[in-house]
View 1 (tube, rainbow, N blue to C red):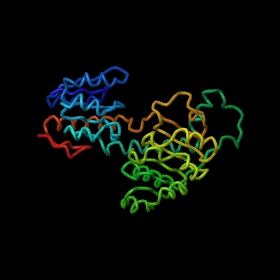
View 2 (cartoon, helix red, strand yellow):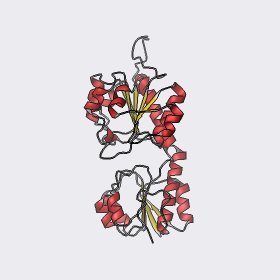
View 3 (spheres, helix red, strand yellow):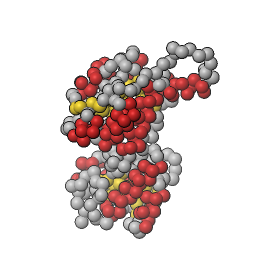
Length: 325
């Protein structure tokens, strides 16, 4: 059995596959494969381990319908045509749960950085602007006792709530399709409507799954309903906010600040206006970028690959209804 891996990944996970008798071919160049290249590399393979932005769409799936398994090195699978993979009887797996803590850490970091204009002040030093002391210039805001609003209180949102409630005694409100009884019991979290979330949050952190329903959910109308002192955090998917609307909301003072680990599009252009706004912090999608988390993600992806090639149910399936014989 042979597997194509479209990135250089943790050696631990690669060894797990090799120890299972699988031949592993890794793409080593520091550039994205084109769709045609990905198809060509997968034509003589039995499985694909995919990390990064490659679209696993209808064209790819039908060209590579022979694949026994596709393992994603991610939790999100919005870049995969899951319905088509299911129709072709190709099991798809992801890596849920393992990156919740690391991603929540990133959201917490962005909240702090935006609240104190940390990235802006760092740039002041780089630009030789650390000079005259003005005690009333470029002030930040404090977080203690402020209301944390979570859009999508799942595993990552829960970890964010834990950090904010523990460090800053922040009351927690959230908007979900269903109740999160554990969060309600542990943090006294209160489930609210989407409009109430917008109106009551001092920090609004997006952690929902990216779907057609959540695409562009944070647009000019949403930002107009938020507090002028609010900070918007997005570590989920860039497509969840309308970037031009966010820029205008910040420039017009409709909200106070923003912290983004995801942008729309990605990568962000170096001259994007968000990078020049003092109370904005932007990171290049590093939510899961710790050695521990990335190693665990590769291990889970390897376990999905091994199970799929053996015709067994995937331990972390996206489409569990697919049965392999």
